[in-house]
Image (cartoon, rainbow over all chains, first blue to last red; front, side, top):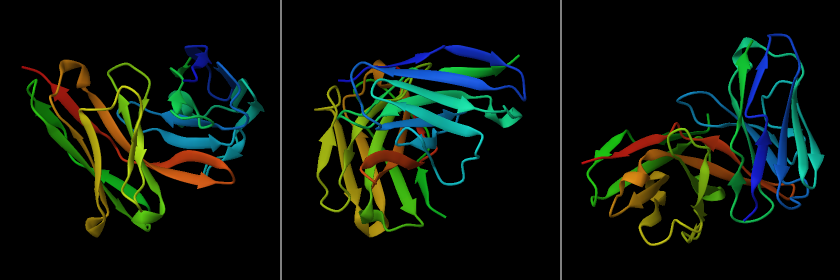
Length: 107
Length: 121
């Protein structure tokens, strides 16, 4: 199965700053990558699919890039509601696999 | 609106069984696959597999064969996850997630809030 590795494990950022999160696949997943946001006690919320396509209703400050094995989620100006765990998940091969997550916390 | 409503938390003893439900509304149930995802305490999510809601055939990820069963009742737009012979390591939150295939991509775009299953003697 494809192993997804996210870095850093924790990112400490001030509101209004830019956050850059990384996700690496153990083998190429083409552009078949999704990003989710998860807050404590809640289900994951789809942000991005196809590596760079925002899901319905997702603000433009969230953007995804990359292909193959290296991917990035950028949050251009962090709002208070953006502090959460971010998960990447590949959907190129079965089984679908998730990364361990990056926690974005307030500085 | 499109939503998935899951059944409430369960506390079970080792060796017992549990059945988690996931009721869909706001969209044609049999038009989208249903996935199941497990999240153990402090861990990332783990995809368990999916069920074709049109044909009813399930696909299980490795590690989720034998004791795990996906089923449907399309008359009430509900998917089920049954776990038998529960073990302490089954303690987790179980999510259902609608699978969407679009533009060559497959992702989970609507999720239930999760069902906490606790296995303890």
